[in-house]
Image 1 (tube, rainbow, N blue to C red):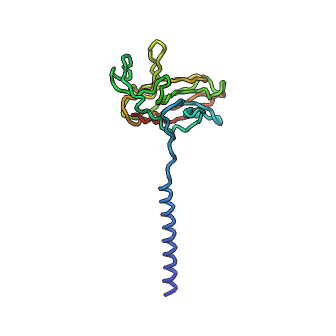
Image 2: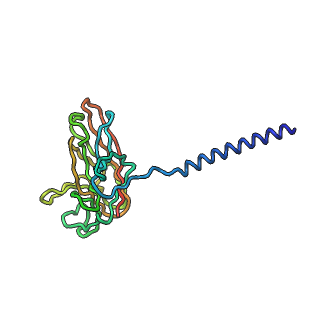
Image 3: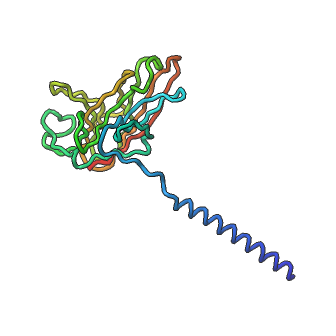
Length: 218
């Protein structure tokens, strides 16, 4: 009888020790900090940058804010659009909002204190794909409207994408493209722009990748 009681006590102690170890590991995992996001608030960025790696087409973010190019995963980046990007909408931009309304605008030309966001395919080698790279905006979430457009020399506007119309919307970028445009947000808050890049390799293989950009506005 004493041997049975002793064995039960030993088994109970072992079970408690195992439970404590499991709980400790779980608490340790819960306490482990998540990977820190990179916040970009000023300087040059190719927010949508196509590149080829290992025969795959990748949608990346090319960060040039520190004077040298750093390729980043868009999922780990927040683009900050702060108070210096706040502007009063002039006439002629009714596709963004009414004249005199407040918007937050990443401008086509660089401005101190505001991130300068563009897009590029210049990391795709010439001859590696057939034709260009299709950039398709598939989904937008956020408190207001998002419009990406370019302004020509004489003031005319070319709207690339707008969340005011049905998605998806697509543009084809030629290989070697490096361009900038205006990114307008009509209300402060967090926006997520999901997009897809697609192309045909020189051998005819279908290449595709998807990513999401996050903007903190206001």
